[in-house]
Length: 349
Ligand code: 13P
Ligand code: SF4
Image (cartoon, rainbow, N blue to C red; front, side):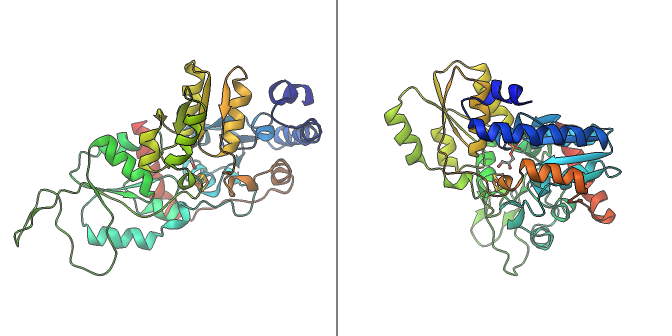
């Protein structure tokens, strides 16, 4: 195991750390066999974990599919809580384990089921799309979910004049730009229902033309990247190709050469031939891409590690299997409603 990890990570992870983590990886893989478990690893896992124990790695959409398809008894989700919940929603007969007790997400925590109900009361009949970065009770209030790799396609699949898109403000604005829609961010103060696009408004205002209704959630990692960061790197390396996750601001996305989900960015680096790239996302993923593409220069602004992803460690992953912790449960009444929204998304692609 040490030799395998060294071949990939020699230039990324200090040798002493590799030796230590290789031993834990061996333990994890043994426990995985004994317990008939599958380990799913999100692209943001730290390099030693990412390249040693997961049976599958990928973005949120990819891993949801793997969770739905597995026939193992236990799913260990090396990611954050909303991802583990999605696995449980899709495959409820399995034991789903999250190696850290909390592993939250600033987006998931930005909105409650009650908020969604209030928005639906304010905009009756308008379909609700929620980003998978939400908890199960919020998904349960939604018509359909999306991830960063299918957000625009999901919105367009609804063929609706107006769509509520929650909770990521920046992803919503990026989807609005991509699909040519006008977006508003309503307050939830009690008011009569607002007229929808296409309905005449009496009183001389004409018609309101908003088509996307957003929410002010933000990813605490991606909101930190600025256009100035890109300009500073381009001043030093004029040939750099800049990639950004769509949870970055629309200004950062516009200043980038490419924007896409974590999988899409990985593919972009693999399939193009630029001498150097700047990846504006969680910095462990920059390390993981660098490890897989040693001939390419990967620049990363490494002040930005997701504090929630960072709680998933090799030690915690081993202990998850050893002590059967932390078990993710979703109440059945919520799960069946959330399932409809997630499954509808998976049918779109
Ligand atoms: P992906 O769906 O692109 O993997 O993104 C998940 C996430 O949490 C990004 O911050
Ligand atoms: Fe949530 Fe941002 Fe961390 Fe992704 S990177 S899990 S969106 S806080």
